[in-house]
Length: 265
Length: 308
Image (cartoon, rainbow over all chains, first blue to last red; front, side, top):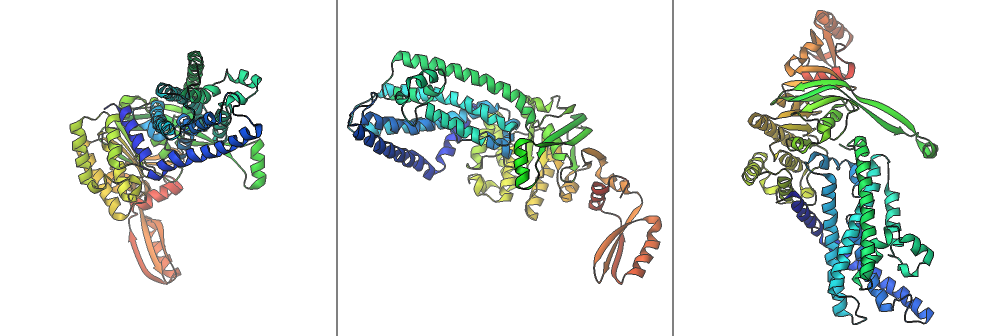
């Protein structure tokens, strides 16, 4: 078996090794976030005395907030600090000793996590449609397209994250930068509030950044709210950013690997 | 073969004064301290040789191992192992090398050892027959057959170390770096690891560099030792010749009613010194012997060669 298939299989076994964590993230986190969002938006809709805001009904909003948390988890893959923590602790050393590329290895473990959450997203989505007879939004092809877009977005986010994580080779702590990246991604990606509620000047500005295509585009695609041109444009911008960040990773790694001291061993 | 020429490594680190004022100052300006971890060291090791790298904390032995394992880049100098420059991390080199660190786990803690071994089989492209043979041979000789299916984090320290050894030797490496392999282990586990390494060395003849604070490890496994002090080699030669470093010297072990102490005395002054001790103390016991290897190395590490 090729090593990357073994890494994929091993990462999957690692995720499934902790049953409580599996159920807490799958059900607890998703539904708590969903219930809070629905309650808040219900109040907003009632206060405005309207059934639709910026093209969203309350049922559409509910579905949006069902997809966002698990989609964001797909996007952010492994836990925050997955590489910098290993650099600080010295466990990063193992990837330098084994005859493989550290970045290929990390990409596979990351995408394994993303695929796993993608699978959870599909189950939840189907459950939603089976159990809840609200507006019928999206269909199976939309779901597959949305999950695929989330996977492309995950690759781009991974490259952005690695650029910051590798700064741990110079700086003592990059935790705050990672928190900022996650916040910006969620906020400017439409994870807190759909981008339709942002002022026009902000959305015009954001369209050149990777953020709207990391969260908003895949979520809206899953809901069947995007056109072919939206998806094509989004993919081009997303892949361009991915390429830029990949080049940054290469540059930083060439410089940074000489700084690694294997501290802790 | 390992060939090291004028290898130097300098580390820089930030220094912060203690207390709140120091922390506030460090926000604006930090003092940088430079430390020479290795000072132009030279070393040649032939295939099949096992050498003991001995030195106090911060002497530079782990830095040397890290450079030779390809983890750290040197500041200057050169090194080749099996024809490769380690820090270039050529896959053909990494497939023939192994690093075992007593304090750090390389196998995956959340999984049973066998899961990690399957991954390593694919990473090192070990064929099925060799993999099967090595798993059985290593598990049998290290006596961990029953632990292979248990999550690694649930194993005892000794069992974990044996699993680490298995993981590191699965691909029959030609170069092995053993960094404190018996640290934290109980006496019987230390003995088992030593015995295993001795047999492994005899059978597979890899180049092995062993660093350890336990002299038993060194005495059992190494014919040749390198003593490193403040980044410089102060001795490189047979373990049996280390006694020559202290010249014609004897050790006086004295036990009085109040205390026990030992004194290193040149043989020519032995009778005079013994007389003085007997006159100055109410001696309960006194014996004279040659300095042990531990005594000599401790003395060299503290005072340097010729000052013991």
